[in-house]
Image (cartoon, rainbow, N blue to C red; front, top):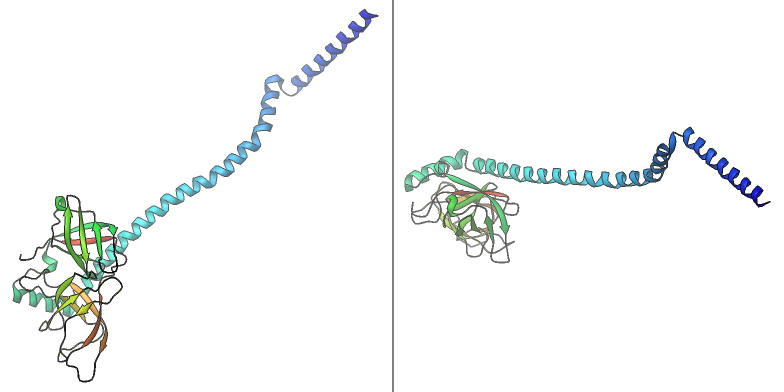
Length: 272
């Protein structure tokens, strides 16, 4: 009886093994079966990983492209500012400033060497307005040199390091620039009054011709801080007070001081 039971168990086991071997043979063998089973288990995870990784890859690529666009926009803004500067120094203003430069025996701006630098620091406050640039004494930048950008004068160098410099902006409360306008017969001092304030100007007699849009440029007088011909400020408002003998003027910088990415240092020192 026991022998018969053992025999039945053996036959049953043999049958199971035979069926399994047949199944594996039918599906391509044990290795193929395991590989197929593994693929079924792993495939959903691989799909999920690919789904998650794909946006990250696009995001990384997008970030690189965005950085390139930002850099290109900064360069284009600088080039546009240079074009505006040349336009502001052209035509009648250009001729008048050339004549003034010859009369005062000072060099004309367009004939002076320049140094291009990137703005790497901005620290304006209510009264102190300055920026930092990426060029210093090793590149030829010296204290006192004028700095232009975005179409006009933005200020002058007030401190330097080997590879950097600090620029005092026109709007700084300690800034003052000797200027002229029109036929160059009237001189005035244009001064800063702090951030978000209009520039101030010394009294201009009513006999001088002034209208909104009139450009004040550096007069280049001997002993001055700037050479002749740098566009400084533009008249944005004219008020005539009854009984007054001078204009009440509102001036704003010709250059856009809010979006400075690149500037040009003019290699000129006071007294040269």
